[in-house]
Image (cartoon, rainbow, N blue to C red; front, side, top):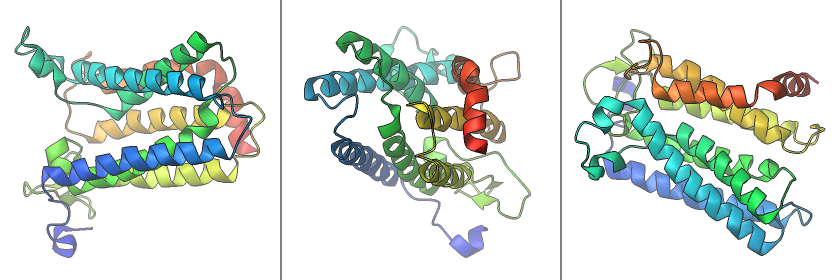
Length: 251
């Protein structure tokens, strides 16, 4: 992969990313609704309960996305404090996923649902993330997802004349492989919700590693970014499930 072969393909204006982001939200939500209609015994089959949980998930994802940005680069986020407008910039899918998880669990508790609901959510989330990362790949310098400089032959010039790791492309490939594995094994999981747990835990491990290939600040002990600490926190949440999830993938 090189700039000569792809020309300016990965140097699109910022609005291209917004288009793909809108497509991601739309297609992901429509996919979730389609899967829910095909499973009448789904834990959120009741319309009112479904609405409560979706609203809680959306609020949790929005707040988590912002908190992740504040943790990612606190020096920049709070540089103009108490000017609140600076705090509204930036977002992160890691924070959105973890915040959405907290929102879903809070919404379920509010309406008295104890069953897992993630098995119909992960395909929609994965599809939305795939589409969104295509937009990131096309506009990587604008949204800050371009990787660090590299001398590897597949380094990509995203518009600054420097060959970089195509981090969004790495993520697209990872998500496609993960989705294929989970879809193939979707009927093999014994415990309800394990497919979602594997999806999220796998993504957190991937992002923990991938972010070492990005030019991001490391304000925590000079070793980790805020997003990586969030990944570690999410993995700690799933720590007790890891042995069972590993066995489920191997069988």
